[in-house]
Image 1 (cartoon, rainbow, N blue to C red):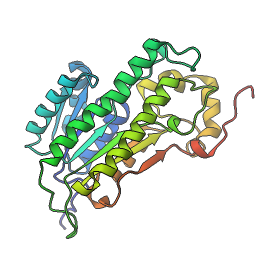
Image 2: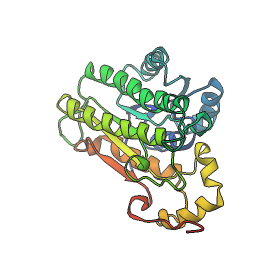
Image 3: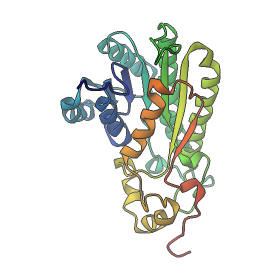
Image 4: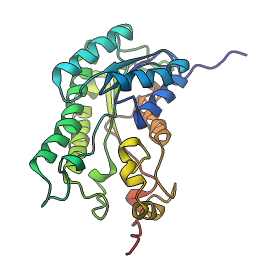
Amino acid sequence: MAQSAGRLDGRSCLIVGGTGGIGLATAERFLAEGARVVVSGKTAEEAGAALGRLGPLGPVQGEQADVSEEGSVVALFDRAVAWLGGRLDVLVHVAGISGRRFGDGPLDSCSLEGWETVMGVNARGVFLSNREAVRRMLKQEPDEGCEGRVGLRGAIVNVGSVLARSPAPAHFGTIAYAASKGAVESLTRSAAARYASEGIRINLIAPALIETPMAARAVNDPAIRHYLRTKQPMAGGPGSGRDVAEAALVLAEPANRFLTGVVLEVDGGWSLSDGQLLNG
């Protein structure tokens, strides 16, 4: 009996921020569905470690890039697209930071350094990667399509945050982070509108609290764990990188060619639930 093709069979994918957490889980999922994948991390060590984990799963390459630097992003795309054979079907942008250590916090106490650092990575990084992807996808011919339907030039999946729409100031009162993710949402929908006629789909995932290295402070805080029991009732706690990876697959796969400009909240009920404070 012939084995059925994967949902991303033969697709060329770049995952910016694919060396840990959500990005690494997404790379694993994409490889399982037949994709060729390039993952990037901030350091060569991160890229090497991810490559060691992902290598047995399928064709994958690890790269280093600073998403806040234009030249670094352009060079990343040059190397990635060359390794992928000259075509980029899917970009997933996961890379981002939490700015607490730089001074991010509530509006009255957020420092200028905190604001500019977070916006410089989270918002500028998505702008640079999405711009580079669109520039390259516009030069590509549409693919062969799926089940006889008109083909597309590519798909972009950005990762924002539920905090852009559903604030939780008692535990997550970081104004620069929320604003940066709101900027990513606006960029995604505006770009989706502009490039739909060109056959480029651009969508956004808005996760709630996911258990990743970046979220270790929150995940290990007893008060926040208590809060998540009712704030994210579908899990009774933090989500996993795999939860977001499954959503990324849905938005990236060619079968879902009719989805663009979508903001998909992968939040375990966060945006629908009150959440009980430990001493509330």
